[in-house]
Picture 1 (tube, rainbow, N blue to C red):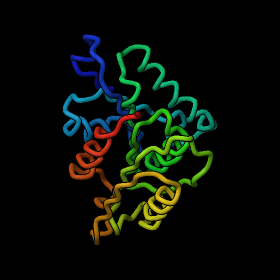
Picture 2: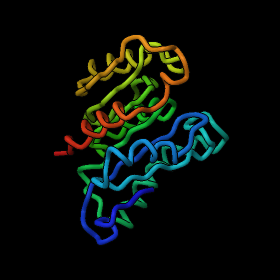
Picture 3: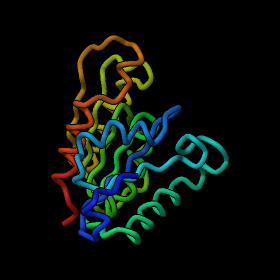
Picture 4: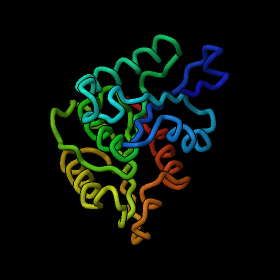
Length: 196
């Protein structure tokens, strides 16, 4: 977690929840997002109960409840602007962001999927949260078709979508890693949105 000094002083501000990928950790998300958020939001990066969102240990069945409890804990301990709670995830965390963002558009003002894709469009909330999606064409871990499908499903169901697909790539693990460009674009997209 990263809480700027203004948050400790009780000033209201936005909240950004970051969901890590498989074989990753919360510190990885903070390492890449702290430099682009630059203290403009409180950041919470929880560790999946089973190590992987949704398909880790048996505890994974409580992931939805866990993430929502993280939000509630942050609201209890900090002066969170309730109309500016954001969600972003990398890799498996991106697939999970798709699910949570679709189902909880009344909670998350906007969502970011980084090197992730669709996990199935089910149980949508009344409000359609906006989504940012970033993928490299030759990502070796997540087929680009999954990100394209996420864009299609979200667009067809009335969500605003900003989609950034980087052509080509090396086809190596580097194409699946977070980078300054995608994190910067994601944060700039998120921070422009609020729940009316």
